Image (tube, rainbow, N blue to C red; front, top):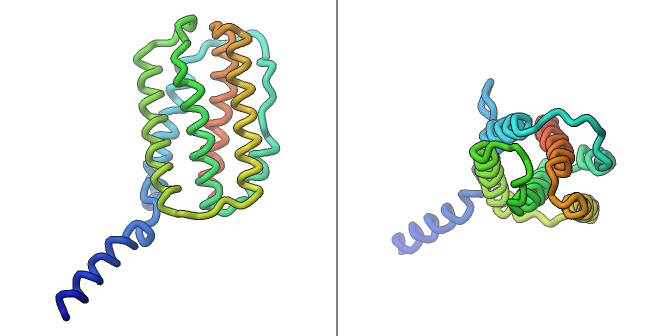
Length: 186
């Protein structure tokens, strides 16, 4: 009887372990950044280094309204939003059609690797939370999906040109910076 109780207790502990420790990827120790913040800073820096000065303003509007709405979300909803947005950024850059740019391939690879690490870790956190998305989160994520669909179509219209990619890089950089400040405000 005692053996069965021990094993039941052990199984219950293992099953609830992830819930009790939370998302360690997003947690910070005193005076040190979380792993998410470290990788977020890396992706922002890599994207800044990849770019060149653009003489014209991109013809792409930034979804400020959605980010203002996200500021009112609970922490787990913000994490879901951040995960969704980073996944769409990863998908946009996964096309690999940036031969027309003067970007250093090693820099692009590092950017993609860091972005992949962020998305995979965040996806695990979101999956472990098992929270239901509210209608407002679904609505904002839907609008962000449409925004990124526009970015993808914009690249196609620009025939994946260097200037088209620079416009996209500028907008994605703004996204990464906003996501970083969204996390900081939690």
